[in-house]
Image (cartoon, rainbow, N blue to C red):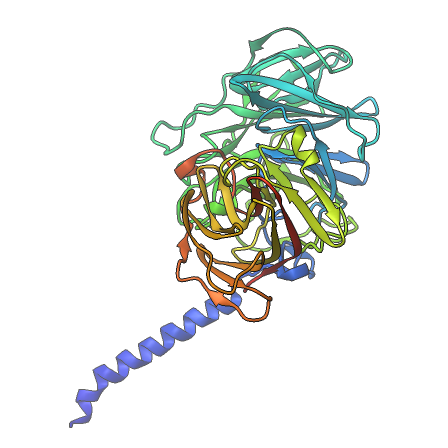
Length: 527
């Protein structure tokens, strides 16, 4: 063969090698999260930089409070009770949970506002129960509790944002540009809400979920009140959500929209973070200013809305705007703050009570407090209902793209128990067992089969969620494992398919009469 015939082949091979080398170089230089306990991803890279999210997993509608050198944050917890878990930080990047602040079920809890006024701490939040939408308040004289029972403010709309006028009067700004005056103690309203703000009119050709004027958060800086609001809808298309700002010299307005709107928005589905919005403005330990907001991770709607941190800067004429950092890349960490240990172990040997701190009942009520007890290294859970759909499973938030969970389970009496990936009563999957049967849960449907030979009432279950591909293994002793022939693909278990604004979470359940003893729950993030 003449050598000239080899040249096209050689060029093609060299191009392929070069392309492969380039791809590997890009992968090697692309940012990756630091790994914390159990391999869980965390933002702090340990080199003076961080990589979003600062809260991996479902932490939507963040509300942040700066209290001296300490920072505190709460999030929407929807149907999960105990709820409104309070977190603490000193550097805005590393966070430790303190514990839940809400125990009484008043319905799905959305978009709280955590504030401090005259030495007392308050959380304002909307909830909907029995078709009635209202707003509530809880309060504490010490932020670590105890927190009061919820007080019904008897006012509609959602997403309350607390503000104080120059005359000391207190207000709640609400969705749809509404505002209502609060009594001096902040625990009742005076009069009816009135509209005070029309929002920012974004271009008509933008692809959004709707106008969605909500999530008002207010601060006073210098001569101006600054109102930060969410618009565009919190889910739907990747380009839906945004952070918008307006300011006024008076708490009564008029409100002037920022020339830098939108402060934050996803412009393309090619971006790493989708539906970026619902921001709160906060001063960092270094004197710089930051926006805390939520977003969906491209390809991982199932993880829910995760919390991001983005630097902003103030202009000479008193507006704030994004500093222009790429939130998909590493960003310099705020200086001056002392890091607390980030997060906590999700494995549980059930030697201590982690209810509310980690575990929460889906649509749990006061009666669920009597359903569980701890006994000799086991969580004993009484059965309720007939299936995961109505038994209030115990679940927790996790933020890894791939992970494995395992538990030892003992069936007692006529109970059915199991291990799930649970989104809501309309979307869950996993496996359960009764004394006689195996129950395969897929797409929120139950398929009942005889229990495999060799499995008694003591069963080990392992679920592996590898980027939405779920496999199930069972064992009679935790040593010899059998892989189920029924695997699942769960990428559609999220809000845009089944609504409810939730996330897909590892969960334990006990249904029917009798009880289930759970032991040695383990969690491990996968590469």
